[in-house]
Image (cartoon, rainbow, N blue to C red; front, side, top):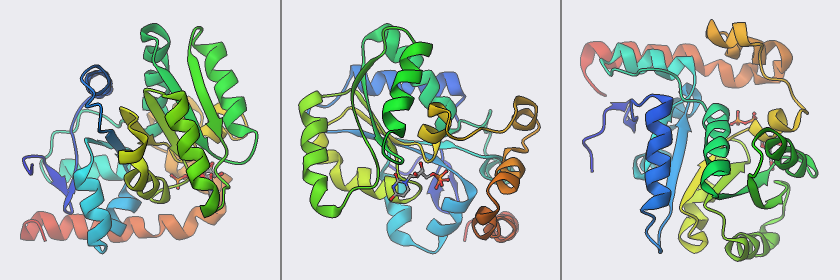
Length: 248
Ligand code: UDP
């Protein structure tokens, strides 16, 4: 179970985007009828939280695939000698899965974001990837007593891939809690991707993504994220400690 490289105790799969996508395909092709493969795109903020939260760490280590989302975690992994080929972000992986889904006939379900956004994201994805089947959508502002209805809708529409955009790590807990009941072959948390895909929020310009400055763009456009980004220097400190003293 524990042959995977890890960053601050969290599993990380050092795969390229193309390899991660092939892994997704194999999860769908060889799906266990009673199970579900949980994919986590891990960033430095969540790895930092997990360092102090054993339950979150266990959840991450139970996932079927953990990709390095964000330059912080890529840097940290490389510092620890893990040969990470590239960032595999939630939104990029989601786009690539949808592209492949349209040629393979997989159905997707979109759960999350404010009312109307998931529908809009579904329409945009279908325009971009003709033939893509959207099994269903639901917004992410539901009450606990509405959850069973959502689970029933997902079961009824039987998608191959469930994208959950409730923010991290809430979406990871939601998937973990419901995946045995859902039996969707692949479940993946995608943060604010539905806002971006629907056109309600803008992603950083391509040049900023290439220069690994996406975090700076998000900080400038959403200054309230400062609190979350303040953990980054602390994450760097833990990585350096772990590098010199061995895994903590
Ligand atoms: N969200 C939601 N339900 C909630 C709280 C948040 O669906 O109760 C959505 C929110 O509308 C946004 C996403 O979760 O689309 C969080 O986006 P963010 O970029 O903050 O994700 P993170 O960086 O936390 O992964």
